[in-house]
Amino acid sequence: MKAYQEGISMTRPPRLDSSNYGYCKVCMQVFISGLDEDCWSSIEAGWSHPVMLDDEKVEVLKPRDQWTTAQKKTSSCNSKTKTVIYNAIDASYFKLISQCA
Figure (cartoon, rainbow, N blue to C red):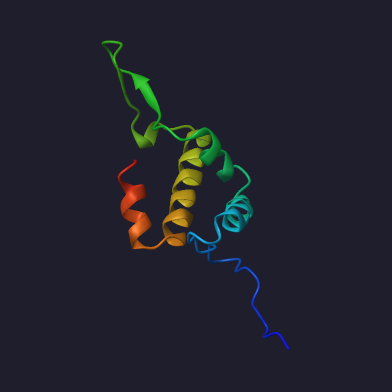
């Protein structure tokens, strides 16, 4: 008789290891989309800090208090997504991934 196994947690992301990448990829997409449908887009399209032109027409980072509602939502999705990914990996993967940013 097979022992009872728990299903996927609704609050904890699937754990990534080298033996379950394909399964984890699908579970991760579902998990992140479950947080907010737009969050998966931050993975596919990437996220960039909002910018604006200063008085000399030079592109500078836009101050957070001037972000639009859409820019705030996109930033929030990016943060949620990074939190999920960092919680799904162990310290050895974290070192590799954190150097890519």
